[in-house]
Image (cartoon, rainbow, N blue to C red; front, side):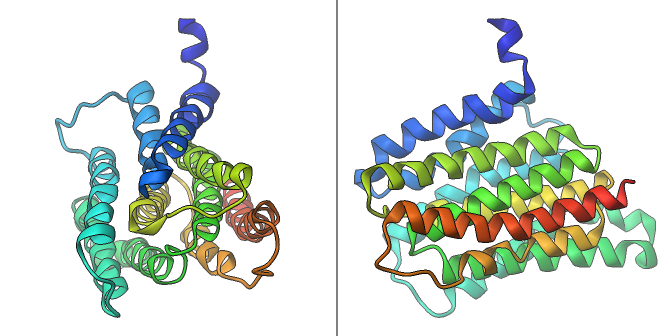
Length: 270
């Protein structure tokens, strides 16, 4: 049993998927099925690193924000009326989070060496969070497809960029998003995603991809390509099509773009 639980495929895939599927199925009637992503991510953290936050490294900052994002999402979904400035505010929060995490690492390198990776991290986080919230959060299938492709793309690129830990965390987000999507495919109707789901999925994948760029060997242009996944998930599909077909098509759109990001990471690594 211990040997099985030590398997990376179980830690970053199977166990997070089971946890997320349980949460999505139980909490969907209460409009909280989006907590599937954080359930999957927390499961991976438990097996891979444990819940220790001292010293507060870049990775632990990402974990903390990953846990905080769905809580903020619940407040946004249930306590506030939607406004036109909401996506902009969340985009700025994503940029600020990226700066908080990576500035202490990049600052000693000097402006010339820090500008490209730092700018990529900040802009990718802002775009991914802001666009995803404004265009995908209200559609459970689009949100799930975007989270699935973002997680798989971030995880795959990180592994190809020589960071297994970030790769497993990304795959856990993909597993959680896949479970959220699967529940909708089984019941044949869309469930609420909102900021509870989308903020966590977008925040985590953008930060994980940026960390794999700055702390491992993922090139900046692979991170930029991955940030286009939400755009792919917003492409039009027949609104009258069955939910399972919409989920399949939108996931394929997202996987195409995520595959480009992974190919760029693979090519950069030789």
